[in-house]
Length: 144
Image (cartoon, rainbow, N blue to C red; front, top):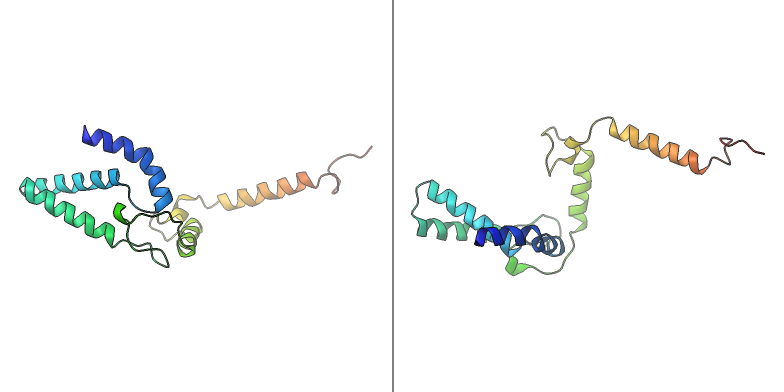
């Protein structure tokens, strides 16, 4: 029941929580801890030790996480406050959109997801839109 509830909450309310705070929501954190615990148990640890190790590792990772630049350190739900990403984060995201580093399509290499011909299509569509707006002035419409 807890996993179903955590999944539902992280996919609904948690989305807004993460977008507004930049931190992981409590439901997603719970799912991460559960996954890490299961991995530790599968690796041969006893359940009590596996749960404690997973909780400690997730807490440490989230409390020390940063996007870099002037973004705040920490993505743990206990550190959440209403915030927006920094200019550095926006700059890195914009760079990722246009620069393909060759590692393929991923969240950190969005340029790898864009076909090489797409910029030409966008520029062409922009020129056509501009001509459409200026059509009475550039002779594209017969005058009566």
